[in-house]
Length: 169
Image 1 (cartoon, rainbow, N blue to C red):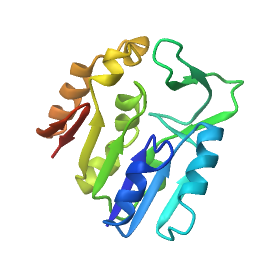
Image 2 (image 1 turned 45 degrees about the vertical axis):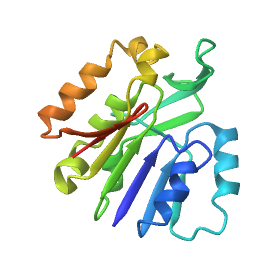
Image 3 (image 1 turned 180 degrees about the horizontal axis):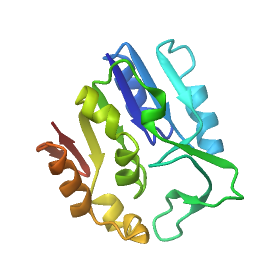
Image 4 (image 1 turned 90 degrees about the vertical axis):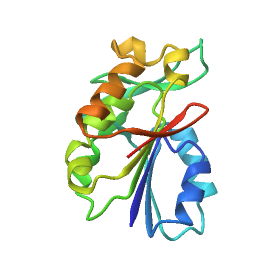
């Protein structure tokens, strides 16, 4: 099957996924981090790398450092040099897992994957708690409970919690 690593960073999760899935699509919008991801994934033939952000619509933006958390976040900006896309645009033939660690943009990425989620019902791993703790999702007026409510409306239930990563089926 196919897996998605949204917010792949330097590829820790991507490498693990590549051993368990036929194809892994790894998304990392920060250009310097993407360069490291590319280097780290060298030789992994089943990994497809995308230097874009995942959101609910196609748009341009910039990567900005949040000084409170040291995380870089996508900020919509029509003059930006970073492209955001939706997962639905890829029209994946299958999808068994979507992992998202998007520094507060997770709900937007889920909304941009609604058809993929409806069609394939993948297992979901979402970073919750950390983004709220860092105040990143709140800049969009979103709380972790908003993400949970959205997932429950889609028919998902929490099946595990490991630190800040929460699994849904």
